[in-house]
Picture 1 (tube, rainbow, N blue to C red):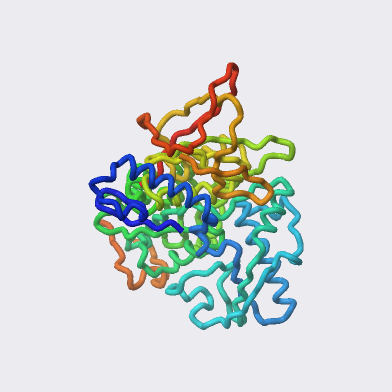
Picture 2 (cartoon, rainbow, N blue to C red; picture 1 turned 90 degrees about the vertical axis):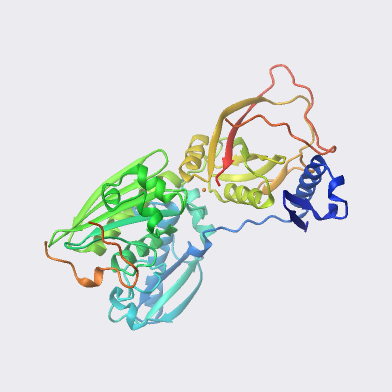
Length: 471
């Protein structure tokens, strides 16, 4: 592994440390660093770890009455349905697709005794689990944790022509304003509330990573209680940027003495969705609303693979603001983890940007729409059409994440006052709040970089999309 040390004005390859710094030019440092980075990419096996693995996308926790085979098999079927819903992004998948039996889909399982504080959802102070359905009730003795074969489920969906929403999941920022008759408050990260637990539990049930706001003085300068109640885009976006760059959920819950009225707003970069539900049972209301919200997210993020016989789309992307290894790794991991991307290859590396060649599973327009809604990569320049150079040269790309059924070419170094509800719904222990031109660049490349030959007449053209990595 290539080791590096950092200096005040950047970073210097370890192999150059023996030289007096005053004798090393910026060009030498730049060329040496990017040459060593290229060599590092060639010699090191690249395995990208999902940032959202902590959400256990393929695990489900199900309450059972005993350890009998009958109770276990019923739980296996229930959990398998939940994972199919997560990976399709569609709560009605079972009505449109005949789901397989459990044989071959269960990888492992384990039991855990039910503790009294978790019965009937009284464990508001507990971290919600990946529960499929309700919390343990009277008579449930165990929590059965089941791990399913995610790869097999994904392949089943693809084989039957359904969209897949894989492990790449944008973090959802959740803003909740509650008016319960006499109190108004915004739910925060450290609050303990049954409403908060119900929202969080249902989002995790659907496999959605989420972030609760601090709602501190910094947030309050930007976003007020009425802004959340009204789902106003501008203040919501400004307040959310410190937490994540993806979608935003604005939720208001209003108790009128006999029923809850809930208003929901889901914001993407280029679209907005709104709906309302009412009911006396806040648990049912929240579950219904979140299923609708996540189904909407699924239509944005789930990818339908190209039909058999369709040619795979190849897209070229220049990603700027990549000036060190950690930012390169972040961009590569991000692209590799998107379900729409089948293969990522590095075409060019310099001191400021990286050009990627992406082989897509999906339609190009769907992929670009997904990027814009994620916010991890920001478009900075209109696309550019580049002629493909003359005689075919040896493949100079670096495989970054290669699907097993694709063979990579030989690689050489290259150059994201009504009656009040039960008091147990109020937040506890947390401090609740009561409210009255992308520039052209000259690229320096090592001497052994393979450069394309002269342009030919009627040459084919590649389209390059220019983005930068978000800060």
